[in-house]
Image 1: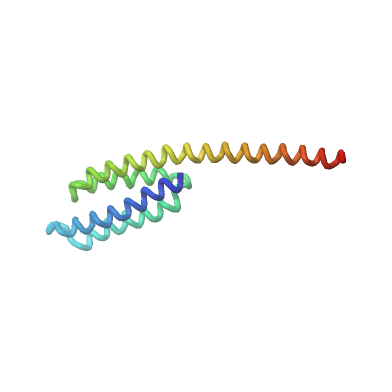
Image 2: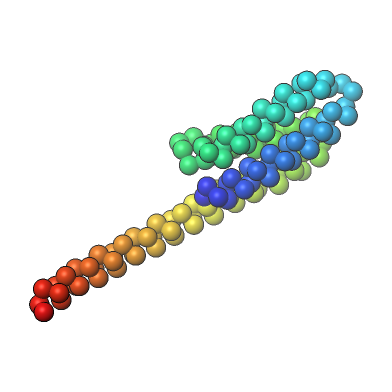
Length: 128
């Protein structure tokens, strides 16, 4: 799950940066406000890459998705891009968990096979 979610967050990092550039063209918004908000959101993307497997990491990612969609009130294209990234976030979490479960099953089978082979090998070595 970590790889898929981190990939989505890195993509969002760049989209937020580009949205900040677009928002700077709005004469009603100060450059300081635009880059403070964009900078915090971009930093959150990077921090979440490391926190994704910790408790609350996925939920914090959902908060970021909602904020990204809400940024459409400032940069209207972000309604669409926010929805796209929310869908990517869902897919990353959903399929990432399935991949993690499959890896765990595979590791358990490999461990069981190694354990069975070791016990059979020890019995055969003692019989010689």
